[in-house]
Length: 397
Image 1 (cartoon, rainbow, N blue to C red):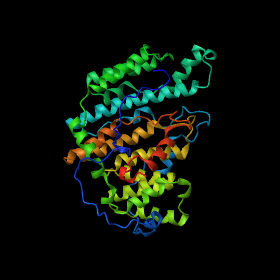
Image 2: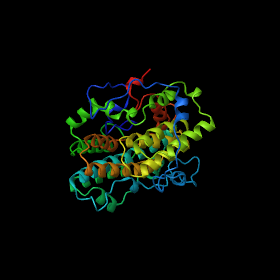
Image 3: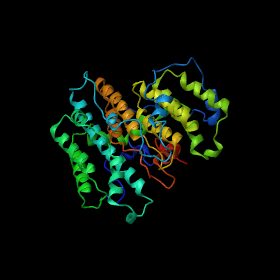
Image 4: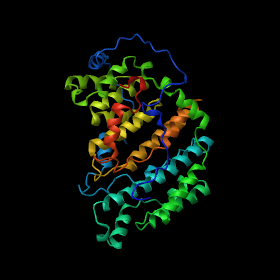
């Protein structure tokens, strides 16, 4: 694997502004003559009502986020994470557990989740040894670092996560391969070969969305996803952060007004859209607003974007360093909650677009540790959310 984690799952490219609209998916008529005003003026004109609490935040509250990084960790210790690896799997409740779609989602999600746990540990190992001369590391040192980075997964958890015998066998083989990993990640090493076999196993699993569904979804994505159908003047707000970010700081009064707008919005789609834009100005408070939407378990077509943004802002607010703890177990724990929201929505409706988004959510990899020159991937994601990710290509400058 040569010091980089092989990409196991491909994330659909439709969320980048490079795609064009070539066909409708439940398209709507946009009022093109809505006067585009200054983005700040649009924010100030948004009405404020009585605050609406969507849910009691338990796993996405301020204290829960802070606790996920473990307040007692040593600043030099980037192995520490309070959330256990076992919390990062999707175990559906009894009321839906036997249904075919639920079984497929559980299998796919947990197959990816196990790969994510191994990838996270593998990156920890290489971050710990990155600046150390190979000759200066004894075999004992190498094995100790690998031991410290191991994902702790019990046999009972694996049995619950992978009720299918073939899938359980594949999961155990990959877990054993990393347990026995000795630092050799060459192409023909036992670890690399085992990882490759795991990829083949994943590719044989039934998918949530068919190729035909995904193709249709991609072609009409931007028409269906267009945020103007819920917030007609959203383009002006989005454009604020597409330009020079140094000039786009809202005043304390403007930011406070924007936050009150989000907190008083009853419509979940509109609330998600506005919270996503608020969070670009205030990553920490914005992550709390996004967390409440996620934890409310109310379906919105913008749920995947909310989770991706929430994860990036939570990590960026803590640290963008590759030496910092990156709480990927915690992030995937919340991803599993999102998956359950999608599943329940799909069981109650014939929403093919939601199934496509669910498949994208399932395929999401970890927040990578050495993603760029600056550090971990949160920095890159935050920048992309302002410039291209989930931004309609018609807004490209």
